[in-house]
Length: 301
Image (cartoon, rainbow, N blue to C red; front, side, top):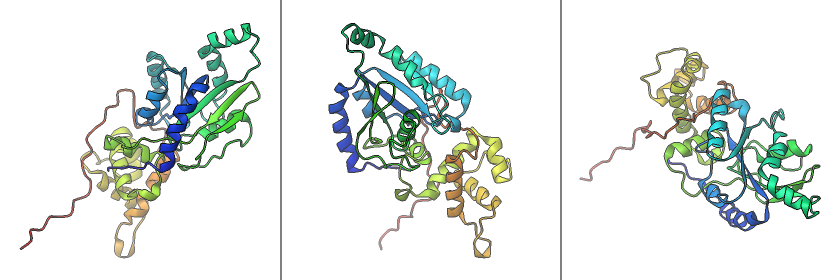
């Protein structure tokens, strides 16, 4: 699938972010723990390269716990401060305060020496759409300070939010980049909810995900499809078996694959397939083979 989604507000937000970044003390980049490669915007990485930087792996309750630990270690080896959190339960979120004290230790000491310790620490919260920025901020603030919904594109403008402990957070819109290459990156962004479903072919998307899950979670998929003979099947064939096992049939016994596709995506996103990380630390992009036949070319007579 060649997925592209780059609304006009994103281009505007990147320009605004580049102007504001010099005015904050540090950047907090939220990354979906299920896709730590595809889930990092390369445009943001370039803008933030000279700014103190913390990576927080969100939605850790949906990702494989061991893989999340490995990713945290990998980011730390790269010189970044990193930890994971679950904004729904609050687990890990308050660690931001101690990490900030470490990341900005020298700056805080200089401020205190000059009698400026009462000034708020200004942090910019960035990430791709639907990664959980608003939920994270609401958890830290203890109130619904930021609008949070389980779909991309909700936050359109940057907003300052004051925490109780002398920290100001700048909530920024979720940002993708103009060309989502390679195709597998776009697919991972789409299946985790970073791209609006309205612009997607959900059947093709679910077929790609089904094929990938056979490799990552074969036992789970065998249970979901009612057979363990899945290794040689295409993603579309796996999706058909999944739909049939759930009893999604139309008149005449035809498999309702569109309904199956929607349910498979919804259940993966909701964690009903278990805690699955699509991109482990040894992840490399693969070439996606087309699951659907192209329209035949007819020679004009």
